Length: 88
Length: 139
Image (tube, rainbow over all chains, first blue to last red; front, side, top):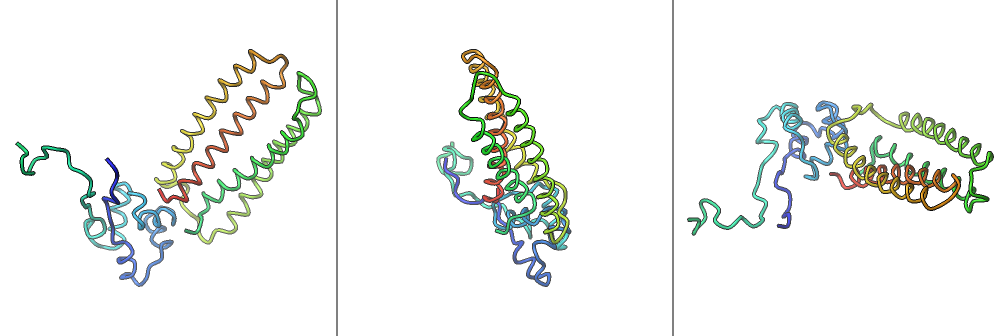
């Protein structure tokens, strides 16, 4: 099955803007990762560990689900998926 | 994306290993006989020392360029290092198997020594190239 775009998305860019245009370097320093890692997370190229995700949310002072969202991948569902018509 | 300290270190390693061992191989190939000569051993030792010096000086230079001190290794760095080590391990394994065949087929110690050296160099190049690829890709 082909991968259809990022499943985990985030609002880090918006949250940084709301924090007085916090730079990626500043966020990286507060979270304890490199600036490149913040860049990769922000661009949805790297999904952080749960620990780093919580640390990012704590820096912005918001719940985790305001920073990260888990969306549908848009890929095919397995046939007979529960809740789909004709599942049983 | 602006490259970071760890990616720059990999570029330094990749280029210095390729240039220094490329120069060494250009000097010793084709071989003069079945065995390694004293001059080739001296040249090889000189290249190793040169590589260490360039890596240290280059590393100091790259640290001086950093605006702020990055954490030693974050989780993404460790993941990328694992990917690089994995590819390098495969390259080294293939190289060692090839060197075993060389030892079996070719008389003298020149080719077995250089087959092993080329395996180590190829393994290091594969490691650095893989890490740079993943740093560039963002993954």
